[in-house]
Length: 413
Ligand SMILES: [Zn+2]
Ligand SMILES: [Zn+2]
Ligand SMILES: [Zn+2]
Ligand SMILES: [Zn+2]
Image (cartoon, rainbow, N blue to C red; front, side, top):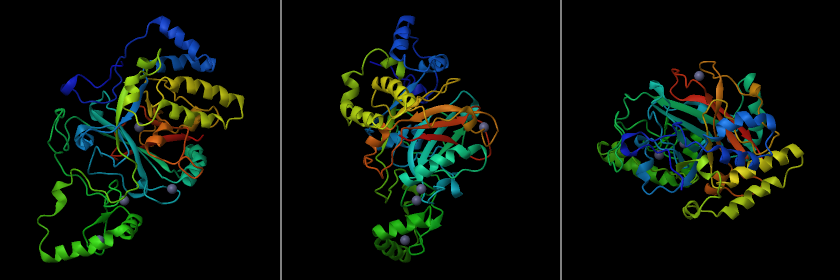
């Protein structure tokens, strides 16, 4: 069974650090070469190095919801983000779909600290609009990145903190810790629990919202009743016993958020030679067969040879661990595993870091399997993608903006 990269117990902050993974023997290496012989030859070599250090992410229902709170530095999918810097959240147009104007929904976050001191803690956050119409338009916008500010429906933010910071102890959290974060953090939207609550309900003057849209949604689904009640309470007494101090586990009114999971990690190298064993299957919500069906249905739509070839190598690789929802690799020269050859970005399509103007490099990709776990329907109007590749500033630069916007490339199926 595979080892994990979780660090050695409580002494370490857990995270996707690139550490030296077990080296495969040359023999195994050759075998794999043959298995993936359908790859393009010229990509084979640069791919080779990356192949050794891919970390796969899988989803698991958390035993305790607490373990996904921000002071445990979680990697998680669905629900609400565990903001690393809980005060200086993204604001303004960053929080909204540039196409339809709806507040974006939280997809996942990856805790991926780096060696440099200012990125002792480092988390990447992915958000997207839930509308497939917007994602289709986003397809055209992502090519524009070099020219003008594109209108995106998928956004990625990077936040990093030094070990000594105002929000967290410099010591790692203890395993069964019951302590709360040092500070409460910014008040969040009562509806989505995701973005900063910057607008106050005019009725109760208590509930906060990220946008008028979410205030309207909440009102329509019953806040108006609460609003009356809150107004009476507020009239009764000063709000000395308000809930503001006990916001550790957040109550969110929206029932449209995606279900919440913990992301657990395994090196891909541990899946190299055999098919995943039963241990992997038992925790999962969907069988490999069902997953395969879903993946194969993508293949039915291909016409070109290039796409077929690319699909075949993609499928061979994914079949080793079909439930992966994330592939992480920050080795130099790492590239995403593209399901189809058309619609891939060239190097020139990847923009420079908008903060330091340095290069951006591939860091991780999100797999379509995530849609199964998010219970997204499989019809024409529902959200769907072949992969979402995330590129980040190679230097993890420090800019004055706390949540730095990085780049996502979406490939549709
Ligand atoms: Zn949208
Ligand atoms: Zn909101
Ligand atoms: Zn109200
Ligand atoms: Zn940068």
